[in-house]
Image 1 (cartoon, rainbow, N blue to C red):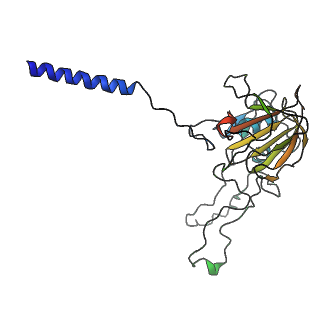
Image 2: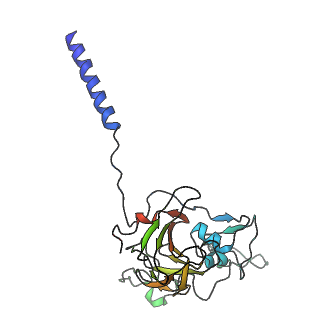
Image 3: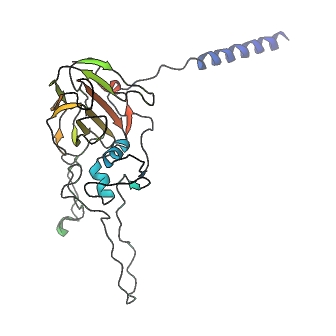
Length: 284
């Protein structure tokens, strides 16, 4: 009997220990300067246009270059779209010829197979030239390739290697998760203060077509990461220009705002993220 009571007591102690350990979750690991691990942001292949949307806004919501969306949907300036319209926001699949053995002729004309379903601009949207990997000389096909695979010049990296603060000044507003909250950080300084690229990337938008942002610059850093710089006074870069982290892109102003400041956002697949997760802890 005493043995049974002892066993029961030991079992109870073990259960309490397990419950105690389970009630205290491990401290979360915060990884700075890297892509979010969780699945978030716009995921679909198409976007349904809502009232008031512009092509520039759709690109911003979905984390894309507006030129890409225009090309995918065969749109031309001034890029008119209408509510209810379904826009493709990912590259369409390229039609391929069947690899099966040829069939006997039927006397009818075979349908043409098109490899491009939409218009192409002279330059690819992100500076990558169109290359056909099968255009090798016939006498080289059988030779083993000794070359090391390299990333094409001006192609987007897999992740952002380095983030820097986009401007010097006083941090007057931070990110908010609220639906109507601030979707970035605001930095206040004197008019004309230099604004720099927060990371390496390509300017995919420069203008004032997005309401509430004033003179805006959007830089694409990877296939999923964008950063935005709003309310600029003067813009020093052009669309499709590649920039480096710390490179001058604009000067601070109050376009679209009632005060001189920089509104800075970071977006992953079109979803706003807290820039302080990525910017260095120490401010300039």
